[in-house]
Each structure stands twice: as structure tokens, then as C-alpha cells.
Image (cartoon, rainbow, N blue to C red; front, side):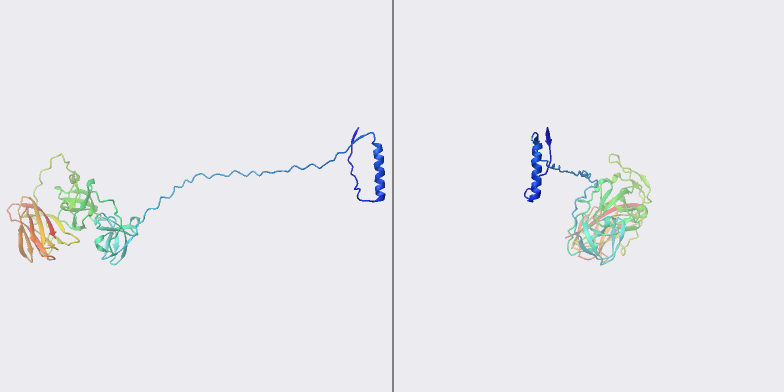
Length: 380
């Protein structure tokens, strides 16, 4: 028999004679009792507690989806505005052309900021809050600056007159309410202005353009002052604005010449010439003018005034029609030279002195009509 017994031995080092004798007797008796028994003493040790490990499981981290907002565009180079001052009251326009709509007016001595220029450098683009995108255009000749503004060209390398609807003005000229010098002037165009063509008169001598200040938003300019192509494809428009035909294809014969009619009256005179040009080294050096005269009916004579800045002027005169012309160059009411159709003559002049050209239809019993083109150039 195996008896497992747990007992706790007293601490023998705690000496007490009475207690020690008592415990010794018990031990002897117990030993005799168990003499025939196998005694196994097992030391019971407390179990080592198993460490409780708690693992905290965190929720998985969500990866945000890619943003749907597009990245901002890279910064664009900015133009540093150039300061300028309006030398007089000037119009601010939508486009770099006097045929363009007016956004507002800037008073004289107003400070402006220039941010661009047209290809011909005749117009400045400026900051103008009332304009589209906060911009507008003013004529460069009416703005003073400390130096030549170094600003970018706006609108590419230049206007394209070959698209069939655009034309470049070659020199300053009037915008008329109809196809002829007898119609009222609605305004003026400057060299390098770009205009949109919308039609032509029956013989192609006058071109209809978009002009917001005109009746139905149209105006007329003399074709001789305009650089354009494919004019023959423009519709034929009457002075009242009625379309009476389409452009003439290049591979079809031209219609017969129109019936001769008297030249319209333009009411110019020696005191109030049809045009008055002042040439200058930094401005206009050449001008081309086209008009007509007739006799015995219609406008019989025209007057043109010019002031050269040099001592030599070249005058070219071309004529068409069934009439004849008498042309004189006058200075102080005195004739100094006569011209004939087909002439290409050089005339000695005085700088800053006004001269008059008198173009007159010769007298006739039958209606004689002549259309002429004059080109006057001040030669250095």
C-alpha cells in the first residue's frame, strides 16, 4: 500500500523543549506504525500559472481611394505690366481696331497698365476691369510711356487676311455708311487694323465690313486701302444692305460693265478737302485715295490736302472710265504742277507746308465718268 501523505515539518530551529519532545514522540510512533509501509513523500509545488496573453486585434486601416479632383495646371508665366499714361481722352475697345466695339472711355492723364500689343504695335492691350477677362485695347499713339513697352504680341504672329473674311487696313481711312465717298463718315480706321469683310459693291471698289457703330452693324471702306484676298467670293451688297448676288467664281467670265452713272456728291472744297493728310517720319509716309468724278452731272471735282515732311513727294495717278481728268497741284492757291492719268511724277515741295490736289472732270455734253486712284508718298 502506498500512502501519499502531506505533512508539514515543524521548524526544528524554533527550539522549545516541551514542544520538541511532543513532536519527537509523535514521529517515533508514526514511524513504527508505518514500518511495513512504503512511504513516498511528494513535494507539491504550486503550478506555475500560465501567462494569459491577450492580443488586441485592431480594425484594418482603410486606404483612401485616389482623389477625383484634377491636379491644378502648372503656373503660367505672367507678364509684368508696363505703366503708361493716356495723352488724351481715348476709347477702350474689345479688339485692336477702330472698327471694334467700345468698352468705355479713359480720360486724359489716366494711368494705365500695358500687358500686350498687336502685331503692328499700333495698339496696346491694357488691364481694364470692364472688359472681357479684365482687358481692353487702346490706340498706342495716344499713350505715353517711359520707353518702348516690352510686352508680348497678342493674337499670334499677325493677322491672316487669307481666310476670305478678314482684311488688313493699309492706311488711315474713313468708314462710310455706304459704298462711296458721298456717304457719311462713321469713323476712321488706322494702319494695320484688322476688319471682317461681309460684302462688296457691284464693281468691288468698296467693301462692306462689320462695324458696330454703323446701321445694322455694318460700314463700308474703299477697297484700294485694304489688303485682302478672295474678294470676288464676297456677296454683292447694295448701299441699303440688300444682298443682290453672290461672289463671282474665278473660272467664270465677269459680268458686263455697269451702266455709267454720275459720281455721288461729296460736297468737298478747297476749304474742306475730302481728306487731309499730314506726313511724318514716325507716322504716315504714304497714302492712297480712290474716288470718282463725272461731268456734266454728278460730282465734278475733288480736293485733297497733304502736308509733307520732306522736300520731295511722288504722286501716282491711275484712272478708269470713259471720262477725262484735269489734275493740278496747288500751293497757296497757285498751280505748281499738272498731272495726267498714268502719271508717276516727283514734285519738289517744302516740309510742313500744305498742298492741295484739285481733281476735276473735263466738261462734256455727254455723261463722262472717271474713277481714279492717287498714291502720294513723301520721299526722304
